Image 1 (cartoon, helix red, strand yellow):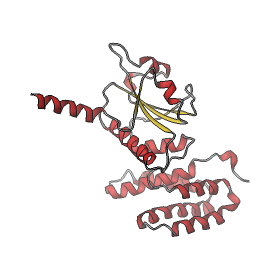
Image 2 (tube, helix red, strand yellow):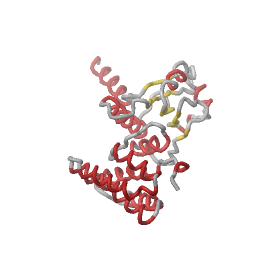
Image 3 (cartoon, one colour):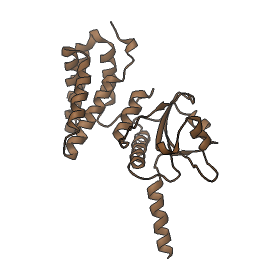
Image 4 (cartoon, one colour):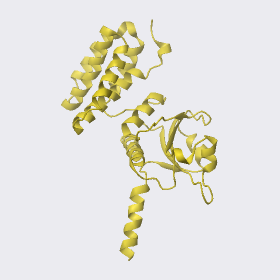
Length: 253
């Protein structure tokens, strides 16, 4: 009997836990978020489970693994808030503040630079949350560098310059090709060549080339593909996002 109880509690723990997530409440919410430039928070039921929660957990682990290895993301908080609409109505005040309804769970909000009044809403639509979508969302809106799967930090930095310094694009492309040529890992080198492909396309066909490539890959992902191919195309979408996440007001004329 004791073994059965232990097994049940172990199963509950595995189902509901979110490794790397910080569980917040009405007392810790403000002071914790104020310590981070970027805070992604999932509002959910007290005991979440299923594919959406699993994807959020996987995303949290990916972010924290990079933080622990010293690569990036030390100023990013991934948190959860459990909301009860019964009993003591735990954390319901926070949910009400952001007009979050129980029937909409899970709801994900992004808080930037300690702005607690204007969070950015993660638009889930009718589809399940995925780790890839969370990476793209955070990369698009965060003010700290987010290295999504498939991306290269050095090449992302060079992409920033490429998109802003339009008159320098041919020279930056040459520098990018030199960086790619020095990558030892063949798999990483093969994927990184997509940066150069996109830069060449932009030089020849204009900035809209990025949108067309994004549409093309999104269409391919709707087909029945192998797991390996889906992973490759998803990483290419991440690289494409490096070309779209720009402050265009700084573009060089």
